[in-house]
Image 1 (cartoon, rainbow over the protein chains, first blue to last red):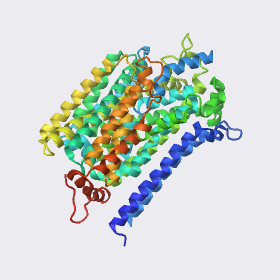
Image 2: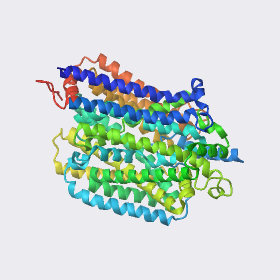
Image 3: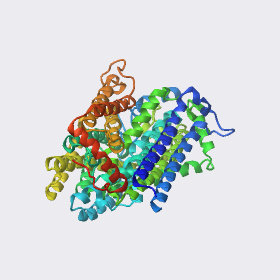
Image 4: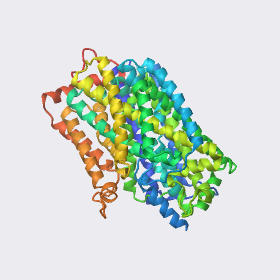
Length: 80
Length: 556
C-alpha cells in the first residue's frame, strides 16, 4: 500500500522528470544556431526538406507525445 | 533588385523580430490605410452578431462574482483548451510569424516553437496544482501559504503592469492592423475594439469571453487549414515542391531552409526561448483560464487540448510561411510601383490568402484577424479587472469578505476603466515604437510570476520576504535592462549602441529573481518566515490531493 506521502513524492518527481525532458528537447532547438548543429542545415536526400525543418515538426510532435504519456500515467494512477 | 526589396522588408519588419509573436501589437510604425474592404466588413459583422448574441445569453447567467470570473467552473477541458488556444493564437502569431518567415524562412520558426513550448510546462507543473488551490486568479494560489496582504499587493501590481503593457501593444497593433485590413481610421478602430470588448466582458464575463475565444479559435484554425490545403493543392500536395519553389523565389535561396538569415547569435536565441516559454507560462490571463473548469482532471485536459490546437496551428503556419515565399514573391500584383509589398510586410499572410482563395478568403481572414484581436483583448481586460476587484478590493481591502453586489459592480467599473484606458493609451502611443512595450509583459511574467508560482508550489523554504524581494528585483531588473537594450536605447532614444545587447533580458533577470527569492528566504528567520515554511506541507497536500493532511492546515 503506497502512502500518500510517498505518492506525493512520486508525483512531484514525475512532474520534474517530464519538465526536464521537455526543456532538454526544447532548448535542443537552439543547436540550429550553433556550429554543432550545422548538420541540420543539410537537405534530406533529393527532397527540399532540411534537417532543421524536420526537427521543428518532430519537436512539436514529441511535445504532444510527452503530454499524452504524462496524462496517461496520471489517469492510470487515478483509476488504480 | 530583390536584395533591395529584402532590405526594405527587413526594415519594415524589424519590430516583429523583437516582438513576441504571441501577444504583441502586430503592426508597428507608419502603415498605409487601405481601401474599405466590404467582404471583410460583412464577415466581421456576422462574427459580431453571433458573439453579441452569446454575450446576451451569458449575461443572464452572470449574476455573481464566481460566474463572472470563472464562468461558474462549468467549462469542459476540451472547450477550455480551445478557449486557451483562442486566447493565445493572436493576430501577431498569424501575421507576424508568417511575415517573419516571409523574410527569413526557417528563422521565423523560433517564435513558433518558443510560443508552443510553454504548454507542456503548464501541464506538467501547474495545471492541476493551480486549479486545486486557486479560485479566481493565480494570486489566490501564491497567497495561500504566504502573508496574504503584501504578497497580493505585489503580485496584483505585477499583473496590472503585464496587462496594461500587453494591452497597449495590442491596441496599437489592432488600430494599425484594422487600418490595413479594413480601411477604417485608427481611432475608430480602437473605439470599435474597446466597445465590443466592453460589451463582451462587462455583461457576459468569463462565459462570454470563453465563447468569443472558442469561436475565434475555430475560425482561425479553419482559415489556416484552408489556406494550407489550397497552397499544397497547387503543388500536388508536395511540401518538398513548395519548399523548392520558395528557395527559387527568395533572394537567399536554399539558405532559408535552415538558420542564419535573420538570427545568428545563439545567446539571442536562448533569450528569446526563455522569455517566450516562461513568460507565457506566467501570463495571468492564461493562468486564469485554469479556474473555469470543474476539477483538476479537466484542468490538465485543458492544457493538453490547448497544446493540440496550438501545435496544429504552428504546423499549419510552417506551410503558410514557406507558401508566402513561394507564391507572393513572384506575383507583381502584391507589390507597389516602388517594389514594396502592398500594405507592408505583415500582410504576407493575407496576400497568400488572396493568392489561393481570392477576395472571399481574403475577407474571411481579415475578419478572423479582427476577431482575434477582440478575443485577446477580452481575456486581458477580464484578467486586469479581476486583479483590481478580486485581489485588491475583495481580498486585501475587505479581507476576503466583500459585499458580492459591490464586488461585481466594481468589477464592471474596472472593465469600463480598463477599456477607456486602452483607447486613450492606444491613441497616445499611436506614433511610438511599441516593440519594447510588447516585450515587457513577457519578460516581467518570466521574471516575476513564474518564479513566485514555481517556488510557492514546489519549495518549502519560500517565505513572504523572499518572494517579495525576488519579485521586486525581477520586476525592476526586467524594466531597466529593456530600457538599456536595443529596443529603447537605440530604436527609441536614438543612441548608436545599446548598453545591454539583448532585446529579451529574461535569460538574466529570471535566474536573478530565483536567486534573490532563494537567498532572502534562506536568511529569513522571522516569525512570519517560519509560518510560511510550516504552511508548505498542508499546501502541497491540498494542491495534489485536494485535502489537508490529518490535523494540519495552512495559517494565513
